[in-house]
Image: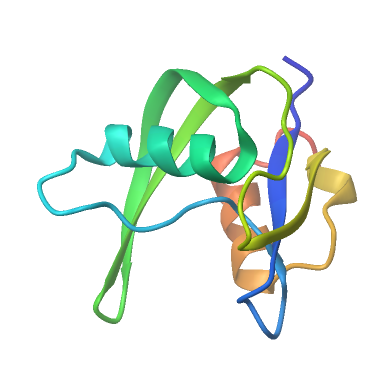
Length: 112
């Protein structure tokens, strides 16, 4: 509703610890179910209005990108996450340039 992006500060990302939320899906788990589970595990948020935006491959890694509304109050609920925050596209914390460019391309740079 505020056109903000949830970004997490991950302990296990060494170069740029801030990044988009995500994780790995379990065997036989559908992608939308996997992102719901990962977000709930890491932030305590429930997701609504999940929309598939795009998928891409990076070497042997496949990323499936969703847009969704989070309901509830976001809070760190995983030992993998240091902190979290909601940011406008123009106020993102230091992240990999690849992720920032990707966010801008997905959102159509309508905010910046």
